[in-house]
Each structure stands twice: as structure tokens, then as C-alpha cells.
Length: 314
Image (tube, rainbow, N blue to C red):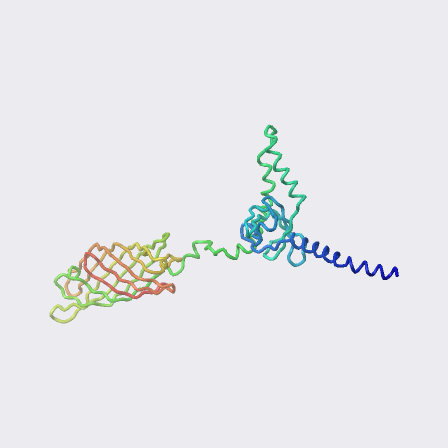
């Protein structure tokens, strides 16, 4: 009879024990919060807000999402309706998304008391540098974070000027037409022109030192003779307002335009002493592709001569 009574009493209290156990288990789970996002500057975000009961200044113990071993601490900086924001103050390894944070109530209250003390005792000589103890671990955290994910996102920058010295030379081949001011009374046919330029990058601009050479046919009444034209020039090139135009190494990428000066010589071989020299003003424009191909136009303003060319940087 006693055994039956014991069994009957156990059956009655079993649901109560079960409910109490579940409440404790839910409470334990509720006190742990999954870290959903970790930024490069040591900020953690938990996609739970005011419902967690957390408040600004609370200290969270961070545990590994796999083994639940303690790996660091964070301080709550802001609690929003749906999100809690915290700042990492300690870490033994890089804190990752999926790690778990839990509240440290005793240490939070102690920390709040320590923060209130300097405010009450205004007459005591307390150096303002003391709170810097909390910032020391932050430097370590920033260094660890930089050695982790943040370095992967950084773009590599050239470490020396030698790495920038790529494709400094540009070779051009094109169609050259000498204007009336260039040829004077002589009738000249268009010719094939060759150019060689040395490119010097300066911030978002490009400066070039170049040499232009072409031969044209002249009809002097006895037959066609070759007329040679040389020009040594110095040009300054700017990128256009388009976003895809930039200076990369020694190569200008995209649309460009420029102005320059040159010293030109016209060598009329059929007429002795008829060589002419001039100081020229150049205007130029073109497009340069990423692989170094160049489509350009040159206009010698005072000579009214022009050239269309294809070029390649090497």
C-alpha cells in the first residue's frame, strides 16, 4: 500500500518537476546570446535587442561557439529594439560570428561602482589616465583583428617606385597630313608617321617626352621627292572627367587630352637650304586601354598639321 502511495505521489509531482527543469534550461539558454556580426574595429552585433534585458555598460563573457570555452569579453555600448551593440575589450583569439556571449552580472555591478567613484570624490587627485587601462586591451584587439580578416580586405599598395615603372615607352604609327602653313607653297601628300614617347606619371597627370618622324612626297615638277619632318616635343596629359580614367603605373587608362610644345624641322631634300624650323604648339586627345593599346589624335596648331595614330605601351 505504501509503495502504491509513493508511486501515486511521484506521478502527481512529475509534471511539476518537468516544468521547473524546462524553465531552468530556457533561462540558461536565454542568458546566452549568439554573436551575429564582428566588424574590423572590434564591434560585435547581437540580433536581439531590448528583449534580452541587457543594458549599456554590461560586461559579456564571450565563449567559443564550438567548445563554449571562454575566449574574451565585451562591453555593451548600445541596446536597440532589435539589435545589441558591444565593444570587444579582451580576447585570447580572434572572435568570430557564431561565438556565444553571456552576461556577467557581478562584474558589471562592480564596474559600475568603480565608474561612479571618480564622480563623487571630485577633490581626490585621480589622474584621468587611469581609465586608459581599459583601452590597452583594445589596442591588442585591433592588432589581432588587423592580422585576421581586415588584412584580407586591404588593397596591396606598391612599396617602391620601381614597381611603378611599368610600360614607360609608347610607340606610335599613324597617318600624318601637313597643313598649308607647314608646307608653304609646296604641295605635300600625306605620309606615314612614327612616334616614340617616354611617359612620366605625376599624380593624376602624365608628362611625355616624345619624338615624331614622317616622310611625305613632294611634286616639284620633275617627279616626287621625299620631304622629312621631325619634331621633338614635351606634352602634359590630363585624364578626362570620366570615372574610368586614371593613371596606373606609367600608363594612363581611359580618355585623355593634353597640350604641349615642340621643336619641328622640315627637311626638303630637293631644294638646298630650304630646311625650315619652328616652335610648335601641340593639342592631343585619345583613349588608352588597360592592356596598353592607344588610339590618339595630334594637332599641331601653328602648322595646321594633324596626325591620327595607333600606339602601344611597352
